[in-house]
Image (cartoon, rainbow, N blue to C red; front, side):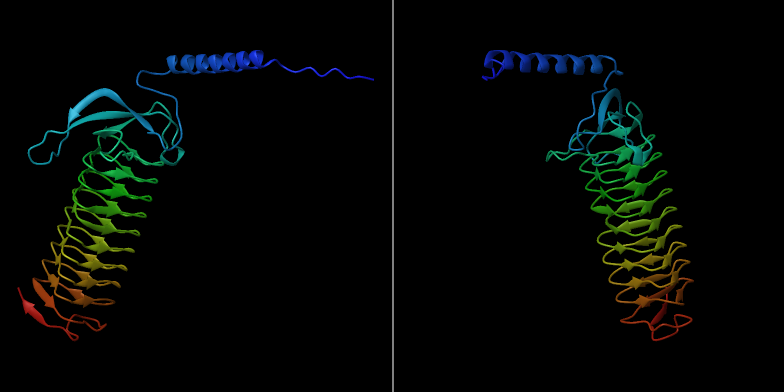
Length: 280
């Protein structure tokens, strides 16, 4: 018995393909038409997670000689990690991409409220800028890091993990990781490295190659600089200054306008141990 084999003629197959493409395109156009102005269909995470709205303003903190124009953003896809739904308005950015073509907000990062992100600043992973924070310059925020309140991040600053900048803190350089908190009107500069549970607040400032780690704490307008290290549960406070190659660790405390510049500080219950102490 002979069997008849039916096949679709090449011309008909091609026409079917074209018809399907036309139908798919029509559906996309109809879907776009039903969305709010400035909204577009979500694509892959290699595409921007937001569109720029027509709402604009000048950045509150501008680089010298520039007036940076910012636009409010609107989400084009759901970002569950940030609690953001497609169509939600966000904060302010200079552009969707950096000059090198990289996305300004990558992965599930987001800008909320009246926070501003401009210059070469980039947010990755689940990083967030909130409230009235400013993130600009060459700042990189990664992990679950946060810029909150009126914090000002600029220069070559990097926040990773769960690091936080809050209140009126100013970060003008450094690498912050772990659960570090910089708050109050504290300041960081240059190439400092803060990690683990280190805390910097209440007018304290660090610069050069200072390292803070463990549960160390600089507060009360204290200053840390040079190659000094503060870790363990050491506290530097009340205008004290730790510098040089000083090393403070468990149980150590420096306060009351004192200055410490030493190659090593042995673990002890006060800074009397193996230290060079000077009145400021």
